[in-house]
Each structure stands twice: as structure tokens, then as C-alpha cells.
Image 1: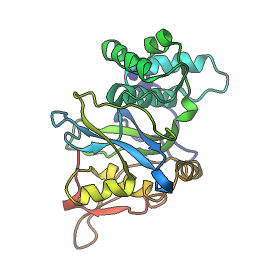
Image 2 (image 1 turned 180 degrees about the horizontal axis):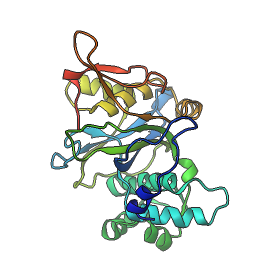
Image 3 (image 1 turned 90 degrees about the vertical axis):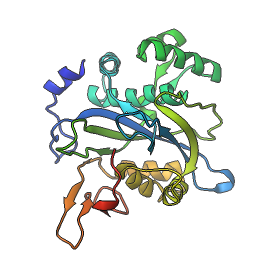
Image 4 (image 1 turned 90 degrees about the horizontal axis):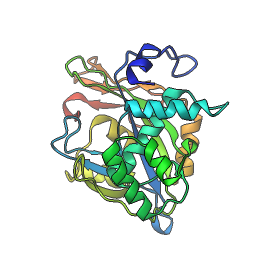
Amino acid sequence: MSIARWRANNAYMTSATQAEPPLGIPAATVVIFRNGENDAPPEILMQIRSRTMAFAGGMAVFPGGRVDDADFELAEAWTAKRELAMPVHEAAHRIAAIRETLEEAGLALGMTGAITDQTAKAGREMLDKDNSLAPVLETFGWQLNLDAIIPFARWFPKNENISRVYDTRFYLADMGTGDVTISADNSETTRLFWVTAQGALKMAEEGEIKLIFPTRRNLERLALFNSFEEARAQAEAIPVKTIIPQIDESGDQPMLRIMEDAGYPITAEFLDTVMRG
């Protein structure tokens, strides 16, 4: 299934009561957890995007990117073999999160099989050449485990003044001890680092990293959790709704606001302090 075909057949709902918003560019990003040391809060994987990137250049973000035609094609083949499979569009977004993580960080998640540092490196090299996850799975005998990619949020920051607007689904994944090898691709990504959500917010306050509005709000939400299990429990308890930030000019200073029932502890920021991609 191509993106164009998906756009032409997008008559579905994001929840029982919420209609699908106008479409942006489909994208997926994943918050990857690993255990903190000595009962410390969990750490998450973040990366610095190259300053040359058109979207969020130089910003600290979670691994991810746009959903490609090949992701939809693999999702269609995967769901066709399973009676109780998830919708193709959902599978495609999870596959994109898996592919982008392998591509950008060299980290193989959401897959099962004989996965080692060496095979992950070889799979990444193959992915760089073919730009598709399907031949990587076939070559190394890996299987998709899409249940390991947990829906967390969906952000669609529409802006009439920006031609490239992403409709991004956020996911959670757990690496447990996190004893894996990662490396930046030095193309889209210039730096990778593990940090607690609170630590990332502190780095932003001290000017060490820069955060766009959705990333900051998600870090504030992630800082609520003392484990991956807590994050997963909240994600499963709160239905994913499409978050479309709105400008509120009712007060003395314009604010950028999001809905208050989506699990976020902070739902507004002064517009003149907001960083955008």
C-alpha cells in the first residue's frame, strides 16, 4: 500500500469519538527506555538532528522519521498473514519507527531472531542501501514484533505558514538493561545519548540542547514515570488522541495550548518562548 493509496482510503477514526484530522505527512517516533542505575529513574534515548535537516535541524528529538511507501507495503504483507492484526496504517507507523531506529541509531528493536551487535550493524548497512526493512528481515531471518512498540501519543502541529507538516505518532519501547551498541549515522543524526527525561529538561534549561514544543511536552510527561511499566500503564489507560496545538490569545500574552485530558502535566507555553521545527 502506497502513501497515496492510504491517503485516498483514510476513512477511519483515531478513537471511538474523534474524527481523523486533515492529513499531514505520516511520521513515527519512538521513546526507547532502558533501566536506570541503582533504582534511578529510567533513561531514554535521544539524538541531535543535523543542522542541515529541513525539519528540527539541530534539535534534540527521539529516533524516528516519515513513513515510507515501503513501510506501508511491508505492513500490508504482515497484516495479511494475521487474522487479528492491527490496521495497515498502524502497522506501517510501527514499522517506520523500527526502521528509523535501526537506520539512525544502529539499534534493532521490535524484531525477534538472532540479533547481535554484528548482525544489527550488517542490517543497518543493508538498510542504508535498500531503504527498506523487508529485505533486511528476509536476509537475517528476523521477524517483526510490533506488540513491542506501544502507542503513546499523536501530534499534528498544523501551521498554515509551513508547507511541511508532520502527523507524528509517538511510541514507547523497552530495552531493559540497555546493554546494546548504538552509534549516530552522522547524516541525519550527529549525536546519540541516554538521559532521564528530567535530565533532558535540565539540559534544555541550561542551553545544552534545544527542544521543539512537542518534544518538551512529551519529556515533561515522561518525567512522571519511574519505570517503563508505569509509562506503559498510563499509555494503555489514556486513549491516544490527535493533539493539535492551538494559539490562545485570551490572556495578556498569547499561549500555545494542547488538550488537558491526554496525560500531559503541562499543557500551555507562552507563544514567544516556543521552539518550532
